[in-house]
Amino acid sequence: MTVVQIIFVITAIVTFLAAIMVVASPNLIHAALWLVLTLAGVAVLFLLLEAAFLAVVQVAIYIGAIAILVIFAVMLTRQVSTGLASQVNRTWWLAAPAAVILFAGLIVLFSQVAGFQAVAEPLVKEPATLVVDLGRALVDAQGYVLPFEVASVLLLAAMIGAIVIALPPAPTVEEKGA
Amino acid sequence: MDVFFRDPFGWVSRTWNDLLTGLGLSSELATLLLQLVGAVVLTGIVLTLSGVFLTWLDRKLSARIQDRLGPNRVGPYGLLQSVADAIKLVTKEDITPDGADKVVYNLAPLLAIMSVAGLWAVVPFAPQLIGTDLNVGLLYLVSIGSIGTLSIIMAGWASNNKYALLGAFRTVAQLVSYEVPMVLALIIPTMLAGSMGMGDIVARQRDVWFIVLAPLAGLVFFISSLAEVGRTPFDLMEAESEIVAGFNIEYSGMKFGMFYVAEFLHAFTISALTATIFLGGWQGPGAAAFPLLGLVYFLIKTATVYFILTLIRFTLPRIRIDQMNDLNWKFLTPLALAAVIVTAVADKAALEVGWSRTGALLAANGAVLLVTVLLLGRHARSLRRRLEARVVRATGS
Image (cartoon, rainbow over all chains, first blue to last red; front, side, top):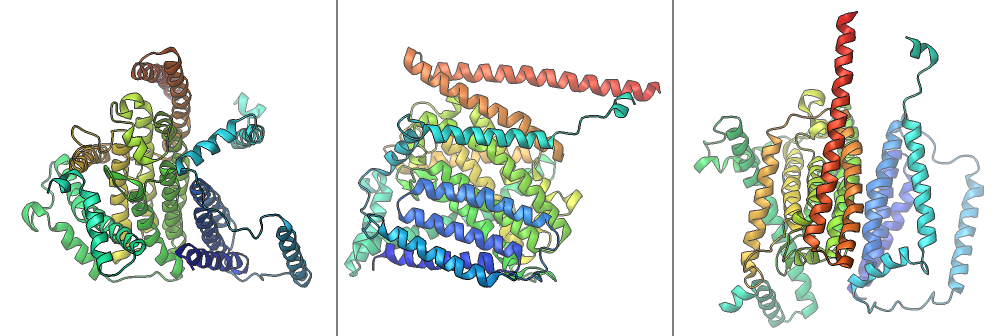
């Protein structure tokens, strides 16, 4: 086993256990923190694939923004730290086999994709050109410019929506008169 | 000996490799060990420097600004005062409050230190002396910095204290929002250098520093990183007079010490980053030939920025929370956005038409600054008018 493989196995185990703890932890804040660990594990996996840009973006966006928003939202809900609520509801015995079947089905499907068992070849390109390629692909008409722009419009709409929600209510007639 | 001065860091790594491979280790393992030792030595030096020297400097400077003497009892000029304080912190009782979430509570100070020490991995101290020259260096800075936010929210929540939680809320509101202008300001050096790697950014500043090409970006980056550190005037998260000490109120002994050191180290780090990204890093006369000279230039620039930072800290009062939000969303973010667009256009236009790049960018920045000042002036006048109207109404009735 090479060093990279050892790191991969350790990361995979940690990520997997953390992902289980996200749903198994009775304390919501703890679940959110386990989620942070899971996301960090995914970032390490990106790094092992020599996708430094994705790894860094994963940390910046998922841990730096989304996980913190999740923690914030959990804090605003009531009785977060009691941990008394049950983890499962009455239909868990239906959900568990469904999840297992779905997972098995995905594995079967993916195993039929060509290249599933191929060993990844080391990248021949310079790391610096990878970022340049990514940037060009995002704004290239032959690349992903349309999805990129659509996503931008979506985000813009969400931002304007947030501003509209946060606007102070318009003064009523009585308030205007006063 | 000439080899040592021409290429000191290559010399160290070669000597180390020869030594270990001579002992029978493989070359790969020797390199790994060298990197580990390098990381430990680097963080050790930086941590000691910030923990011992910077705290002393801070006290001494603040004392001078406030017309006092500052520490002058322990050691010459009170230099050993911080050592005494560190020993005091270590020997203090380590208290965990009742009802605290123990694991999260103990993890938070570690993460705080880690998030700051991690930033030093991509700082180029001198030619060839850089932890790792990531091709996404600037983004790495942003992402590692966000772990610091996480540590503060963890500390605030796990302490089981309302003041700590209030501090954490304020912190998140401030840090998350000031990340926006910071990232926008970082786009400009990326555009000018054509790379996000810190090594490249320093290399492209050989002729002109980026502070000349993009003064507005430098200013926005400096202000928003001041807010990221959470020092006066942006110290809402630990405002003593409002929420006692904010997120670290329950921490005692060395765990408090870790937050304290993390804050100092963070302030020093943003000085180093400002020096690297906008002031040319290790660039200076003769630095390319003698790398150790580059280290000296880098430290001088960093120290200068740190001095300005300390001056600001002890000159300005704390801003209110609404002013904090206004400054970010109504001033810094639009300014940074405008600067990004104008810089991109001016840079490209200068390239196409053949103007001098420096002149075009300076003119563009000047135009943005002029518009900003005009708009700010108009805003200030309208505010004053509204205030006067209120006073007149209050006295008239």
